[in-house]
Image (cartoon, rainbow, N blue to C red; front, side):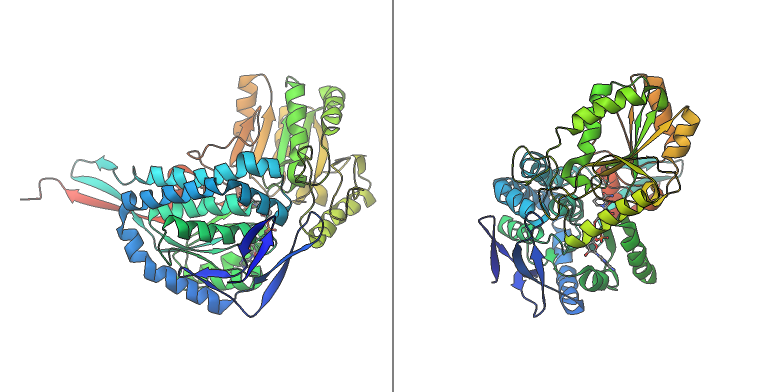
Length: 484
Ligand code: NAD
């Protein structure tokens, strides 16, 4: 088996198909965003590897589905425990691979990934007992496993976001083929070994590494998948949707965002400023980040000075250091994209209140940036930058606020800061978003629905919404008094 030593951990660089490691002749180079160092040459799969993985998942499906929720629960609990047991290694490899903050990976991301498996394994035990009475019949609702699920995930949180799909899919009784992101493929490879060690049978969880346009496209176009769950950019989702439309494969899409961060005149400015500075964490490579600050004009100066002070603590640096809050952008290509957005905005008259350029820390590090003076129709307000770049706009009344907040094609999340409950709830109900956080940010409950409106997604994950997707929901309507 071909492995590379990453942050002291031996990580396989091959696919995992039908319980075995499989190499491709073609490879792609994987580098660390921390210092640009080459980490590994990873197998680059295509149609052949995808075919093999889907066939393995299809063969494994009847037995895995037949285990029932109890049988699957036992092995999924072991899988969750294996993730926790290897938490330090997973966190270190994730940081090396995608530049996310090590402290955050250790404290939150990896434990949450284990919970993604455990939570859905527990919840599946309670599925399928709904009975709906009606005058003539009793409706028995069943959640039957759907079949083979294709799971395609992005680089900004590959391990957590993949387990967020793997957990409910496996708990529901589906078998899966995972296509990890080529810019950060390593922890998904480790996931396959942990699943194997935990006793998940061969073929139930397969991983095909590769480039999106090759391995990802082959998976999306495969005629023998029953579900496709994708987290990534809106543009890629539109391509995937063209493939899945041909086979009518049901899709779940978690996509990009340009979330409004709303500060009302009666907000707790200290809390709002601290949380606003947190939008720069992981260099703003967070789908949910509140990248459009919308501040009540009557308190703009006061809030601005508190925000500036809070951003002063957002140290840019090596994501392995405890003091770092803003790490690198993922690749030179992505850096250029982020820089391009900022340069074009500055050329069109937008002013940087701070930042706006490469940080002296290194090649892929961009300064936390706040841009003022952008019109609503400008690219910098309309398009997802996916970097540490926020815009600053003010509003005079609630109608203007709602118009600005809803004035993009996205609808992933929104944050509202106000001490007035009625106002906060009214604004929250008027804003188009899958999740609105009031006086907080990024507090995630696995039982609650999660997803995006408009171009930010299709469907919801979390709680039973995940099972609605990964199951064939069946109603058995039994005529009352018809049995002997
Ligand atoms: P991306 O769309 O470029 O890639 C995502 C995945 O799709 C990768 O595995 C990639 O290899 C694959 N892919 C690329 N082209 C493909 C194709 N033609 N067919 C099939 N698969 C293909 O996104 P990214 O740059 O990896 O991630 C950043 C994006 O993800 C941002 O837009 C961000 O907002 C979004 N995101 C959303 C959420 C959410 O929960 N809504 C969470 C994290 C990231």
